[in-house]
Length: 344
Image (tube, rainbow, N blue to C red; front, side, top):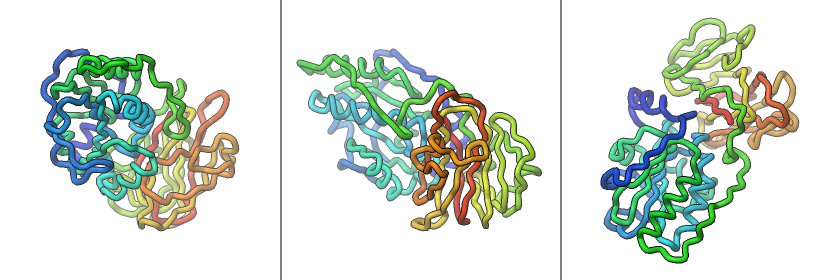
């Protein structure tokens, strides 16, 4: 896991980042892909082995909504252009501590059905070699190993695919299909709505903002929190006995709740059980009632669900007109870790 100072400086630039691109014809030699603790779907790949291939290096992390919404394009490009000489490499660089665990990454890669090579960059060695600062970040490399284009953040998929096609043709690919991939995605991988007015919000004290429970956060010690009397838009709070650490808050005993006043179609939370394999049951409410048709892919119409693995959970997907709404999640078992909220 990266040190806290680096984590803060890097993640300040990620979720909700405005898409940025560079049209430079040559941005320098692609750094070596050294330092991964393991590789998934491939033996380790060197720059020498990749020479003669067009390479797309995608920095991602499996609990980041921005990375997940890019995945359908990465998978589609890897499949469509493989025979034409494209190699997609998904460098998994963790944001949270549990994402540095190779077993968690391998399980996520399997669950997400990612088939292209994944170096597990738990120590951020490749990240630093690229001087990268973003999730997601894409570097487009020509057959000579030179970075020719980069794009930070979601979006501009058409332009990115045209860059892939141009680099492949430059490398001699013939009979290339000039059409663009058509993506149909649901769940967390679906495109965001146009109604997102809530920012990514962290629960750990190192980056927490808009905390509205009565009293201050007590860092690294158990404390009983009272629910906020009233929530303004994008404010949140805790209820019950919680131990708030730098990265996450842990529920010490039940009952325990988290509330958030938000404006978006989707609401997600990054959650983890303290003990691997021990599920934590929860109940979600939207404006004080079961979500019904507005439940997410990880919650039922009655709001019920379980935290079984450390990952991002989609808890709300609203239908119809989007308005300010109050979200509540009640945990029926202790031992859950809450990291962040994201929206779509």
